[in-house]
Length: 209
Image 1: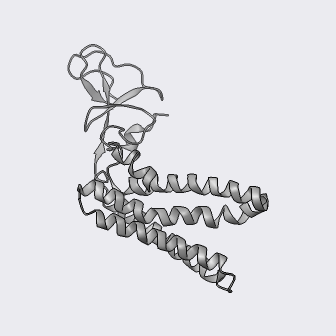
Image 2: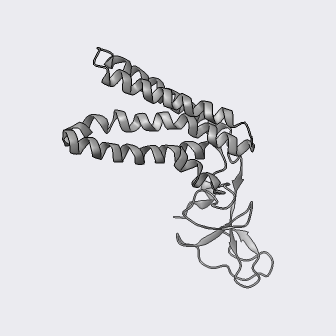
Image 3: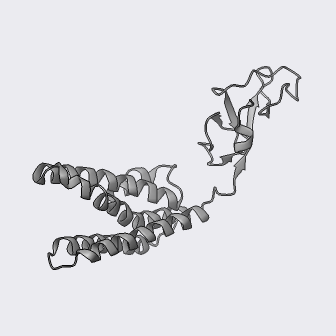
C-alpha cells in the first residue's frame, strides 16, 4: 500500500479505480515474488508449485480491495481517507485469516480455499465496477493523420488533405496518428490515446488488406 500510495498514486496516470487495482496488484505480485523466493530457499523449490498459485493470487485479491478504493479516492478527489483505511484494514484481515487457516494445523485448511475463492470473487466484482464507472469508458476517438504541407489533421484513410489538397503519406503499421479528442500523437498500434485515455476506434485502426 505504501509503495503505491507514495509513488505512482501521485502520477497523472493514476486517475481512476481500475488504476488502483492494477498498480496494487503489481505491487502485491512483487511482494509475493520476494516472499516465494524466501520460502523456496528455506523449504525447497517444490513449495512454489502451491504458493505460486494460491499465495501469489491471494496477494493480488487482497490488495485489490484497497487498490479499488484508493483509485476511487483519486477519482473523486475525496478527503475521506477513512474509506481507504477501512479498505486497507479489510485487506489485512483477509490476508490474516488466510494465513491463520493455512498455518493453524487445526484442520481448517478447507477455509483457506473457501476464503481464496471468496476473495477472488470480490476482486472480479471490484474490477467490473471499476471498468463500468471508468470516466474513459464512453470516450472514443477517431485516428487522424497530419498533412505534411499545412499540418491539418485528416481522417485516417484520406488520400488528400481536405484543406490544401496535398497527397497524404502512405499509411503503414508504423504511421503515427493523432487522437481526435485531444489531438495528441499516438502510435498506430495503440488502442488507446496515452494522453486523454480515449479508446481509438478499432475499426478505423485496422489496416487495409
